Image (cartoon, rainbow, N blue to C red; front, top):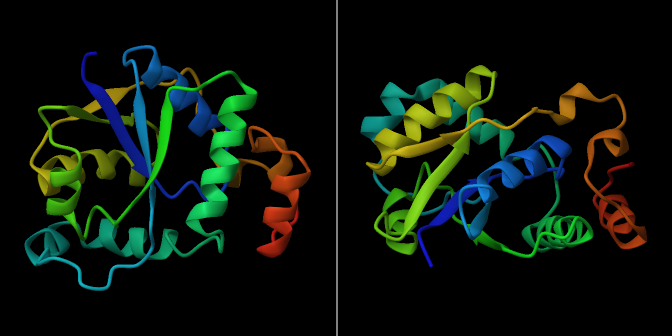
Length: 181
């Protein structure tokens, strides 16, 4: 088997744009390891040299990671059920520590000789800066893919319009977290 892709994000609501990115990655890779970011940054490594250069990026990450109260296990269920409903079985969902604060843990877990770090090229300022920042922070190339379309949760007035899949279990997960879909 060739190299495996690894990508990560918050996945607050698993939306159609995120699925399209996964589909695009899987056109080039046999397998994708999808990291769902754990918001905890306690014990963070020394990243001051990057925080100064990418201050806005770190500040945005700090805010975005707290936007949705879903826990990792709930996100994992939502993502895996959604992918299975669409016939996608070659994605492994794992929890990752905040990569911008724990770069050596990420690189040890996903060595660059075995995993390509892959992100989409999207139009938001955050996404553009993210690709450059992670190339420097992780000291590795970010392979960029261009999904056929992008979709953000903020683009929809109703979350249900933009999520990939839902059933009663997923609706209950959202409700337990105080999110109406």
